Amino acid sequence: MQVLRGASFEEFVRWYVARERQKRRQDPNLGERSWDSLLTEMRGAYPGKLRPWFARGRWNVVLLDTLAEALTLVCVDNPEARRNGLVTGVSKDNRIARNVIARARELNYFDPGDAGRSNAIEGHYRQERIEAYRRSWPQLRDRERVTLCGLNEDERSGNPRGSYYLHDGFGRLVPYLYLVVYEGREYNPVEAFLAEEMA
Image (cartoon, rainbow, N blue to C red):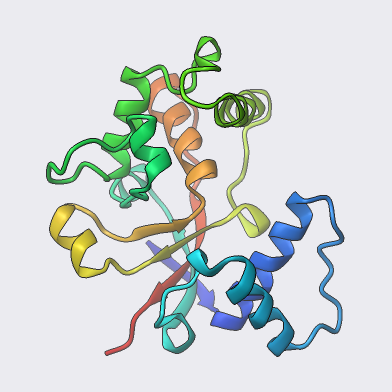
């Protein structure tokens, strides 16, 4: 992992709010919006994207130089991931990216014939994403970067081979890694915010 430059919690919040606005086809230019108004919006609209220590953490923008680094990230454990079979049971390292994409392959998670398996909207979204990547290989940088943070105790004990938690970017990184590992696409280093809790 290569540290590209220092960053801050405020930069992360501005990046995240702008990205969400762009996804909703709104103007991502935050202009002169005050920090207080952005933080209020972040806490109100996207509380799941904040860990309690983020405001006092150390922030950097980093580059995951190798595929091996990316495959050790710990992925989210939520009802959607469990419903779709990407995370199962409580076995050690069941949330490591390498194992999650292996499950995706076993389940034909990205296969177009799977549209209605659990939720038609989810199925359509993931198929649309991977097909877009097949047509135009992405650079996961700048607005498309991901966000990583240090592992909490549960994440560390459940995933001893894990390096960092993939805090934001599951929908971008998992199909990207899937195509690298199973379809032979070139791995281009992935840019990320990295937040680390200070002692």
